[in-house]
Image (tube, rainbow, N blue to C red; front, side, top):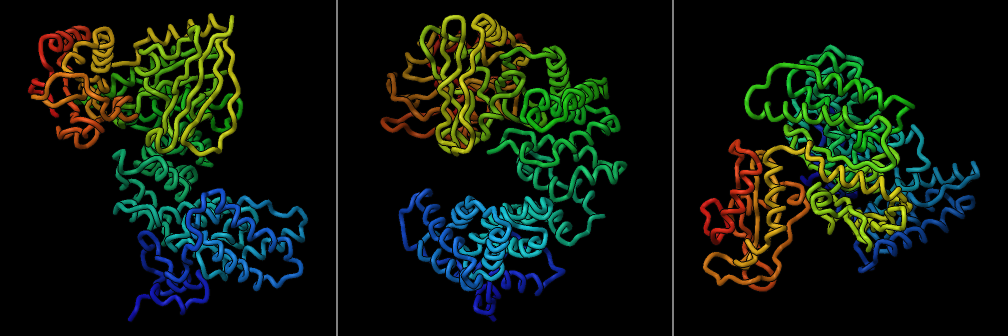
Length: 620
């Protein structure tokens, strides 16, 4: 017998189809990845080559005439006509149809608004095609009422409608929307167990399911952490069972994951209960054990309140500062002595970061530069942050990624305001500029002022407002840049060694170019922070020494001290350049305890003594 989804004619609408699948196994687990929609529900694309704006215009042009005539139309027939007309446009991608429909302004007249709502409900509840239902969901996203929630939850079981349902459901019921998203997006057994528990309505088992979630960075990313927090109602759950063993620590961990910038958006700013959760965990933070792990996670939250995206949450006057002080004081309390090298590394980070946060000015100047180093226990980027009038610039002006590394902005002198205007990249998307964009500014000096203007955000979505030109007192600006360039208190020995090597090669590029080699990224290994990695590219050993064409440039992760590509990390040959053969070489230098100045000097001496491609430590 055919599976239900292979016999769509048995279901008069996608809603009835989804409801039939649910009712056929009401006590079964939630479907992994959702149920597939019938093939007949996806019309064939008949108008190839439409750009996004053109596709949106086609959808809007279909819906507007119908919406304008609803008072004289039978709504059921109008919905059927809309589905046929949408199919004729050839626009089949549900996200495009949803976005175009959601952009349609609802009528202001209450009677017309009620008609539009009824029309949208006909499309959602009776639609037989993905574009038709997506259009209804788009219209309903601005018109829905609580009675629509059960219908949206049922449609959320279908793969292909998860994004429209999520967007339409979230304003009404964030917990339900998060559960729909998790049903489709989670694969790990621990997460699936939590999803099944939530779907079954077994709230008593939720705390234990939360404690079973994997704590590796790749196990739960920032968006997954936000969706989990929304689905379980984390702040309320924590207040309901504050004595549950381990739940407070798990809430702190999830909040820290949401604040991480290792994702395509600042998820903490999308979490509607972020302020409530910060208040709750801060009030209970003194109950956590005084070990390095918990102290480091609390300090991460303090750091994000100080200069990260969490600073931008809708805080009541004075509350952010009060929570920051409490978290900082709690994290800095002496605790259990660290055990092992990893704990010692994190303890050093706690002391270093707490000292810097306490030394930061309480009343920040107009322009402030800070370097933020993440907890070594949760590898993350090392970024340069900018506070303008006390507010973090990058998370407010650019969402997809963190600020550039201090090596790129401070060690290079890129932020100095010279006689000629200079364009500087302040931030890059988590996934690279070519994918989701970057943030650029032009720095120029105008008499007694330094001006940041002519902002560019290439490659990213055009959804953020234009940025103004910022004018700074030139003397104060120069002093702040000089202070930041000379402030190395954020660094650790291996990172300091890498910066000294970079400076040495800046002064003597011939140490590599005489062998036809080009300097690559030089930083600390992302997962082995006590190891300095020197990379360069050029002809393989045995090829004649020559100046080669530029090979593949280092990615954004390399510039921030993240590991090279998987092949390079295994010592496999790098990619070939467009013309001529080129390899990437890696020289790994574990910290041996000697001062960074001596280690860097030894590296430069060895580079001066012979061909670096012959070193046994190199892979290429």
